[in-house]
Amino acid sequence: MSPLSSSLLNPRLSFSLKPLFLFSQSSFAPRKFQIPRQFVSAKRKTFSALASEQSSATDNGGRSGGGGRSGALSPSPVVEEVQRIDVNPPKGTRDFPPEDMRLRTWLFNHFREVSRLFGFEEVDYPVLESEVLFIRKAGEEIRDQLYCFEDRGNRRVALRPELTPSLARLVIQKGKSLSLPLKWFAIGQCWRYERMTRGRRREHYQWNMDILGLPEVTAEAELISSIVAFFKRIGITESDVGFKVSSRKVLQEVLRCYSVPENLFGKVCIIIDKIEKIPIDEIKRELNATGLSEEAIEELLQVLSIKSLTKLEEILGGAGEAVAELKELFSLAEKFGYSEWIQFDASVVRGLAYYTGIVFEGFDRQGKLRAICGGGRYDRLLSTFGGDDVPACGFGFGDAVIVEVCEASIEGHQ
Image (tube, rainbow, N blue to C red):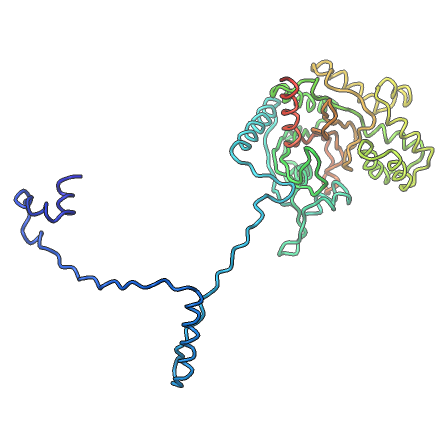
């Protein structure tokens, strides 16, 4: 503390230091302070005593009979105990404290680096979209899974359950200003009200990569190659995960043989997509309810059990478009160096209504988790929203399942 500060705080010191200061005496004139009023202590009164005094004051005020305000005291407010709220996030959602945020950032950085390595540009869309955007694209069956409501403008809106419909909307909006082919990727938060299982939440982040304007199978081959590159970057090998590949056209060719109407195709795909999730008798019952004959159902299930592309070729013939495209994909996988990652499985159809050709799913080899990722070709999606169709394919990759896969891989290598 400086001498000046000490002098101002201590009057005794100020007297001895006065000669040292080059100030007038008036600047150091003593201040006069009011003598504080005497503090009167009071005993603490209990709540009942205060209530008694108030009651007494009310009685006296009533007896006074004077005009004007009553002498009664208003009762003291009673403070209610604050109820504790549920501090957990809504069911199916997550907090991201620092340690989880570090993991999310690490994961998203790899998503971005791989996407850019393959020449994709990042885009984003609104979390809130028109409800009809998702229903028209995925079918009425998704309505029960939407977080939707009517806004103050009487518009039906929904939190996005996926990213592909928003991509289609943006492409139509931009129109001819876009140069094809497009290679876009996005990482966005999605919401879907569904039954939760291991690796499945009602809120998750999804990595999408899409190619528009490229009709050749090389587009699907590139997408799968990019996912393989991502797995390798984070230490996941072909012994940990793999890809099941098929084509919607396989199912179409079988149904065409039994004169099944085209408008039933989407419903049949939704049922077949549940083939590993519910008993086979339930699958047959649901297929029969669509109008399929027992003979058609048995033939369909026989084809869907095929795990060999050679066997499929024997049944459908080598001239079929589905077989030709699948053979080309496996040939490209050999050239790109990931043939050991993929296998044919005719039961893979993907549940969403808009897929039109090759479809694929990433899965864990141990079979403990749901699909890690999934995608395929959707050449007729844009016309669903009133636009001109453009050849397109893409995939979606959730953040929740891959974290489980990484943890399982670490445990397996310890």
